[in-house]
Image 1 (cartoon, rainbow, N blue to C red):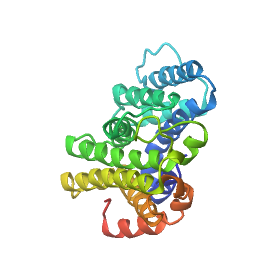
Image 2 (cartoon, rainbow, N blue to C red):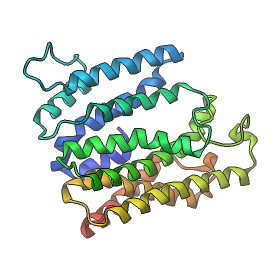
Image 3 (spheres, rainbow, N blue to C red):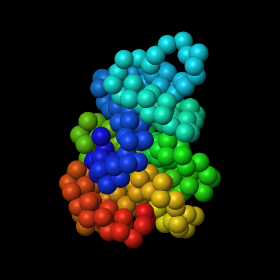
Image 4 (tube, helix red, strand yellow):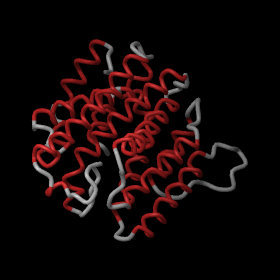
Length: 267
């Protein structure tokens, strides 16, 4: 599971019972493209997860069968069965479909494409969390989209070094130039630009929703994780090749999370 997601669940044990299965399911989806060597096989894997999601979301009494026998699918199905609000299939499907870009060597033509993908992945993921937490109003979901966009952009930034080692250029930049071919100053500017984009979305979320419902905090506090990543990136000079591993940044996250919980904040 994403290290920040695991820490947020630990800090919110009661809501965790309602969203943990979804976050584990979503993590399994995120791993699927990296388990194959050919795009065609990756598409088959993602189709499997898309079909599994529809089975997990089926709450009808006349269902034709049980969800497929995968621990993450069965756990998600049980969580859906016990939820007051069933997640929207469109959000789940859009989240899964977004991972098709992980099969491309250059997935983002520009920052706008990266922003859109971050929203599709993490914005939708957090909105499903809100639905499982019975939070359905537009303001909270709009804020979750912004939090997801900010967190998602930083996930890509912090994954760029590993992706480059695997022959993928996941950061938008001059066409045809690999990260190692760019000067350190150019890489730092690109990293700083992406941190700025993320900060914009995090600030926008708090402006739109300064006082969220308590039930929504486990989803919205991914904003705090994004702030921790921005701080770490700035301390490293924002060069994508010099950033620490997210797991290392996550070690400092509990203190930030405790401070926010004491003050009822998420941004």
